[in-house]
Length: 106
Ligand code: HEC
Image 1 (cartoon, helix red, strand yellow):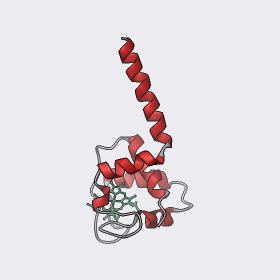
Image 2 (cartoon, rainbow, N blue to C red):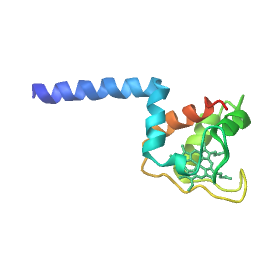
Image 3 (tube, helix red, strand yellow):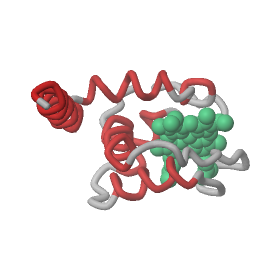
Image 4 (cartoon, protein in one colour):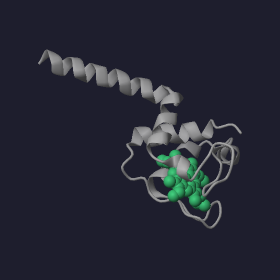
């Protein structure tokens, strides 16, 4: 029982940390193959993350919009290539990824 409680509190601490730590997002990006279609500064198959940040600068709904695009996939916003859905990512990871993309600088 004590072990379970300890694990639960460790997990909660890790989750709280991840929510505020954009560096954790960089690992999620790597782990999910985002870099096979994206880079920070250049267009590959998908737009450069810095271009996405530029386009959505000042848009207060940007985190929600991008989280949804990553989760459900996206097409028609940037060109003819489509982004597939990433439906296994948690809501927390999606939000973190969206915030990280919005912070990208060329
Ligand atoms: C198979 C290639 C591919 C992969 C893998 C991929 N993307 Fe994309 N991504 C694209 C394309 C193509 C677009 C442009 C879609 C469009 O025009 O609407 C895009 C668009 C985006 C956008 C902008 C969406 C918008 O609403 O303007 C974001 C943010 C993004 N990708 C993040 C990610 C993240 C984070 C991952 C990894 C979890 C990822 N992408 C993986 C191809 C990919």
